[in-house]
Length: 414
View 1 (cartoon, helix red, strand yellow):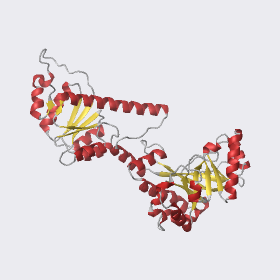
View 2 (cartoon, one colour; view 1 turned 90 degrees about the vertical axis):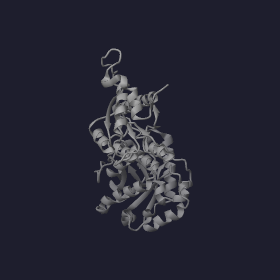
View 3 (cartoon, rainbow, N blue to C red; view 1 turned 60 degrees about the vertical axis):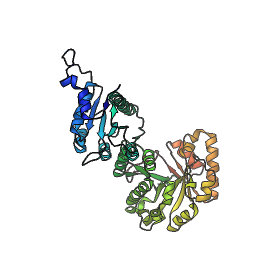
View 4 (cartoon, rainbow, N blue to C red; view 1 turned 180 degrees about the vertical axis):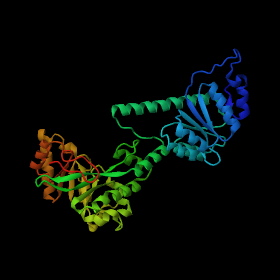
């Protein structure tokens, strides 16, 4: 029958024959190679020492801390394969410890132990990033198996990160809630806006700039990852406000920069600060084009038309972004009645060598002009694409051919 980690005395008795690492039969040290490094955190010193002895005999390399603060100090200087923590500790609870831990290490597995399990504590442990939640007493063999699995999990996570770095592929970001919260907070703290010019190619003048969200948080390596994190954490409103404030500031200082194009998540339409006279964008509303992607599900906003009407009354113009990439048909046009459309780059790439793409873009451009809608072709990378789009009647162009997105404001190459 498996032994239970039920109390310090039970563990001590189970380890009595191997005092100081001596084997009963030979009298020589026989600890197996380390399975992995483990940080044990518990305010019960006797239990902590007994658990430490057991893990050493099982082949692990454990270190101990009697409180969350001491554990955080160890984590700041050493790397561990797995962390085992009690959930009820004085000074810093197991949940608080998890939050602090994720400031240091986003992926290390954490196994929570508790002598008083409840549905609430289990739910919080899982929500805030516990790899496993175990109730005392726990079978020693089962406990060791969980730790071995956690060690393998952590090593696989590190190998995947290393492979992604070597291959140049993007990480999916932290999977547990507390790790995601930490990453998102860092993303907000390091958020900045890159500006890409939108040009009038016939006159060789800059019409304006699109403000594009950027962050220095490596675990959320692109704007889509930041948006996904905000959505999962129900913090899209907070992200939208931060983006709009940062986008406005450089333009307020430079009237010569022209129009400002700002992307809106469809849920931003529900944010009352969007139509507030005190918001940063409102101060230059007559220069702002609000882009709403054609991929967006406008059904999420029950009263789109009055909200759009209010934005127009303030001076904003509306653009449909990624035209040609979505599946909304005429719905977005009917609800938004845009002043500007932006052709998706899939319609632009290689258009000079594709008769089909040229026919589609010519038709779209002609229809838009009939409705007094400006047409922007984005993703322009070659002079052949540029010349073809101008010939097809596109009013404005945007892409790496003219400038990459940079801090305000990049010079344009003609």
